Image 1 (cartoon, rainbow, N blue to C red):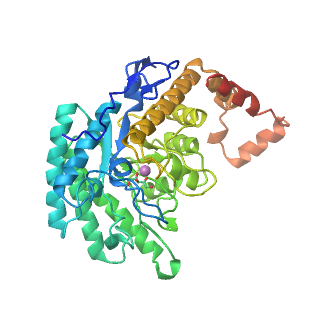
Image 2 (image 1 turned 180 degrees about the vertical axis):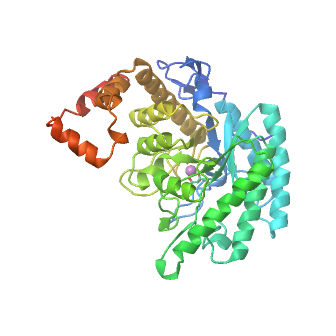
Image 3 (image 1 turned 90 degrees about the vertical axis):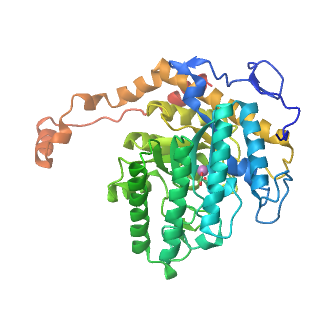
Length: 431
Ligand code: XUL
Ligand code: CO
């Protein structure tokens, strides 16, 4: 058993007054809020890729994070990595984790070898999950890192790559099901294009739709009980990605008749890249009935990159959880930290403290959101704004009848204040 986090004791809730870095100040897993323990609302998950597979590289430089499971090219070291990962889940008391196939097993020389390796590590995870009680929030396939996927997976111009991708998703869905995964995520990492000059957009869209139908069909066939989720992102790595944002994904799902089969996993940083706020994407998914789960992080607002930083802004997070609560909560989804350390944060302790801060930020934001909802003043103000519609039959009428009414009643609507500043001041009282 590795002791990568040697000397770091399990993190406990000590309340907001303490000065212990290695304690939760706001995340009190058993505290009952809106009728159930906080841990059941938030359903935190650690992302395997950022925390254990990423080595600190950026576009200008290589590895900065030195870990005992490197180089990541043998099953023995893949298991060492798993030992450290489960050690972190235990220290944090994180109920869930998430992984891609490529994070957890070394790349083999053939599909069959990759498959066998994934199988072996799935068994290893299964044992560890049983011993520790950690659950799998979601599994997914990495269809974007290897050079075979450089021109896309489902949207590739080469049908053999489509086939390879389909077989990979099948193996990852099987592994997710074996581990009792509560969701399966599809992020179209390279499902987009660099230039229209070499791209048949209509054909690629059709391929992506058919691929998704095949995944849904297979999930049903094996009796997968979790949610199937698409993760929207507008660009990065490709210049234009097809799953641009929640609205685009919904149109795509409708087109292929999948709006009742597939939901969305919304990531804060992706919403920002799409020119939206996180809460906008959450509210829209809630309104459309497709909110599935969230990838919690933050982007640097100046750089315009997907910086995947740990969240640390309580007011922003509060508005996000407010929309989640208004939509009925996360259900089978959860709060996955799709967030990575900065490349200078090279100590094992940094990994622990990043998650402690992220979980506390979420807990504080969530508690504020719950108070906002419980007090009801915000919702009352919203309802009052639309009160005229409660007794109106306008939407059922035709244009002629409406025009007639305007003339008969000599309508002269008077503008009313939207009271935005008052509402913003009200929100600040909960923080
Ligand atoms: C990439 C991203 C992915 C997905 C899973 O920006 O967010 O890590 O969450 O493939
Ligand atoms: Co993500």
